[in-house]
Length: 371
View (spheres, rainbow, N blue to C red):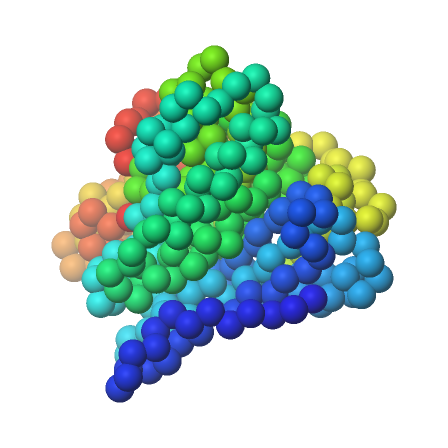
């Protein structure tokens, strides 16, 4: 194992910040795996899982049991970790620009469509190697305009040519759930099963250019553009939401780290006995079948359903209680589904997020991710 420090903010008279990555195995010796934690820097459960993964990977590496290359970034956002407002960490948005740290990654497919014209054929392995080479070049040519973009370029540089990308996050309050590309269901379902995910949300394009899609969507965009060429979905990228932001304990973290290691064993990256796949807790759910619910007016949020419960259309999920006017309004989904995520706040203003319900039938369009 070796570690690398990547300078992110190094101007004179400004605080210096570095990103640290840990590298295991050998490039070119097998599949490449990239794992990062907490690009939204205040999503702490991901960092604890990464810490435990690091200890186990150190041992596996010392025993020569890594059959490929693994890059681990246990704290992916030093910029966000340095942002504190009135004593509270604030890591979802870059305070200098207002932009989400998990949006606006460079999507290289458009440039590659031109560069690959007339160069692809029926040899899938040769196509994958060429696409990865050109994708690396395209990311290298990215000229970031600020520190946040510099961070995004560095992260994408390490991940753009990976076979497997695990982007570890958490929600405000939630059951464990995942986001991935529709063409990747077969590759990601075993991870969902091992981690006990309750929802696996899928889309070909979710909007906003999130990190996982910057790594994976290029493959099916190019496959659609070059229908006569053999282009597999060669990067299995997934965003893993590790429950809620206060679910920080060794039991959950060890459970999640072990599941990730067993997934990598199933993928042939680790020489260790792989746990048999358990029964699935969920199948793929279209991301455009998720219904986000908002507060109709200001008041105290009182949940009447628990996370992980199934709800019927129109069934009460929560009440918004205005203690001044006495108004009480019930919040309900318009479609049946699973209540899988909610806000951690218990007093809301009108229009603020209450919860999300994963249904079965597509009904939304446009940008499918929350800001």
